[in-house]
Length: 79
Image (cartoon, rainbow, N blue to C red; front, side, top):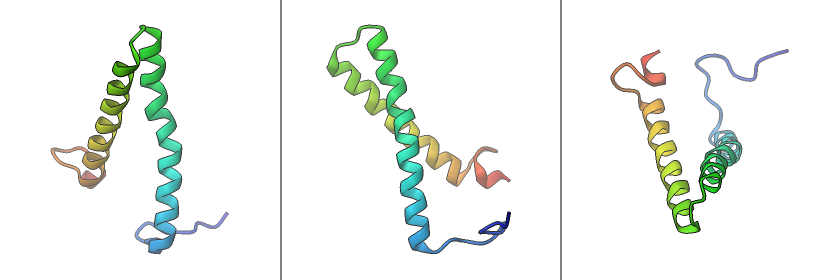
């Protein structure tokens, strides 16, 4: 199988946008499902479930920034 991109290649902006949207749709299910299942299992009211999902989305965003930018020996920038 031939690779579409080599190590230092960059996809076009249009392809990057489509791939980012695909990643977002794949990740959002797991980011939202875990707090919903956990919160429902412990019997949290809907207002607390919303807070738990929001906290999960914020944490996911912060971890994504750390992964992209790196810092302190973590993230993809340390490679």
